[in-house]
Amino acid sequence: MNKEMNKLLLQTIKYDLVSGILVALVIAFTSTFINAGIYAVGICVALANFLAYGYIIEKYLRKEGKQWIISVTYFLRMAFIVATFMPFVKNISYMMYYMAGFVSHYILLVGFNIKNRKGSV
Image (tube, rainbow, N blue to C red):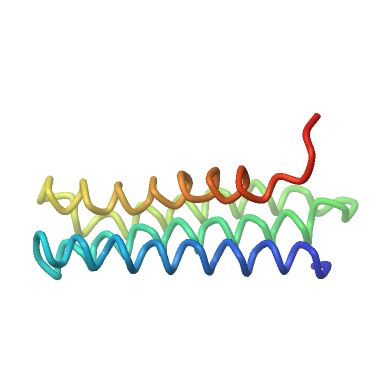
C-alpha cells in the first residue's frame, strides 16, 4: 500500500483502539470487566475486518483475473465475524455489548473521516 493509505489506516487504528479502551473502561466501572472485554472484542473484530478488507481491495482490485478473490474473502470475513459472535448468542446482554463495539467502529470511522476532510465538493 502507498504511504498515504498506510498513514490513514494507522490513524484509524489509533482512534479505534484509544476510543475503544476509553469506552471499555467506562463500561468496566459501570458494569463488569466481562462486558467491557466483550465490547473490546466487538470493536477489535470490526477493526480487523476493516483492515482485511482494505488490504484485499488494495492488493487484488487492479490485478486482471484476480477479482474473484475479493468475493471469496468476503465470505471468509463474514464467517470470522459469525465465529466470534457465536459464544455470545445465549446471553442477550453479551450480544448487545459485542454489537455495540462492532457498530462503534463504524461510527468512529465516520467521525474520523469527517474530522480529516480536506476540502469539500
